[in-house]
Image (cartoon, rainbow, N blue to C red; front, side):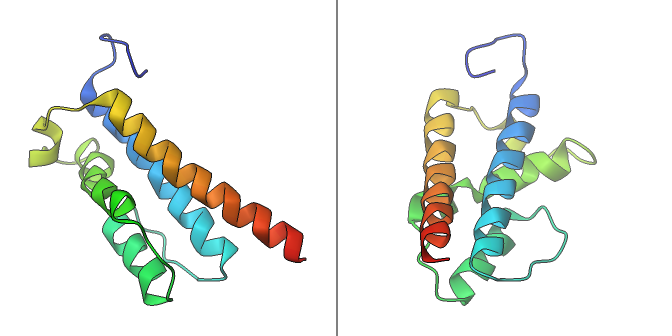
Length: 111
C-alpha cells in the first residue's frame, strides 16, 4: 500500500490508524492497563502516560490518524485532506510496533 497510487490516502490512513491503535492497545495490555473500546489514539496515549509509561513524542505525533478511523466511516475531517508522506508514516508506525515488540519480549523474559 505504501507506494500504490491506486489506494487512496483515506484507505491508507485508515489502515495506518488501525496499526497504531492495535499496537497501543497491545502496549496497554502488556503493562496491565485496562482500556475502553475506543479508536481515539490521543486517549490511548493518555492512558499510557497516566500510568507512568514513557511515550516518545514521535508516537504522539500519530494521534492525528484518529480522524481516519472515524472519518472514513462517518465524516470528512481536516486530517483526511492532509498530504500523506506514506514512507515516513510507515517508518513511524514501525517504531511503535517495534517498541511494543520489545516490551513483549521483556515481559516474556521476566515470566
